[in-house]
Image (cartoon, rainbow, N blue to C red; front, side, top):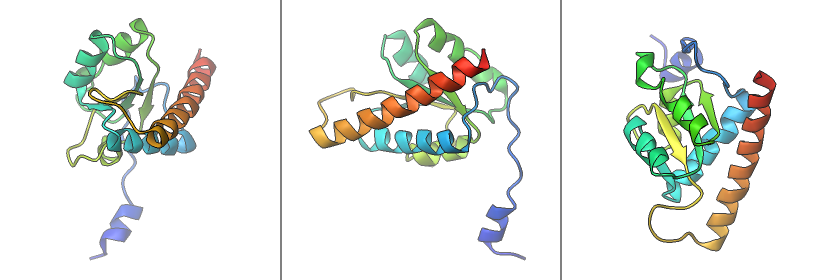
Length: 150
């Protein structure tokens, strides 16, 4: 038997859903997950399909990050449509496990909504600036990927 590190290196490729477009590349995926982690620490994150849909319907803005390896796919098929109607940028990342880790939760997460403002209270200046710069950088890259798709 091998160690855990060997098993992680030989991890099976993720079975992506056919609707997982625009899919973040390696670099964009890394930046997006970093943004999710920073938003989670600043309490500017909505986790799970139910919370994300509720936030979008209430008019909250942000970046929607959706996992590409969801099964059954019917769970998330309505989320991109809601995002497009509300003009919210969205991007797919390959793994729901990685998305959960970045969102500081142990349960695999289908989708998260990264908001620039917390639900309650205000952010400190430095934390707010870092979050805003990361958010702007990732959303501009997502816009590039999305425009290249059409």
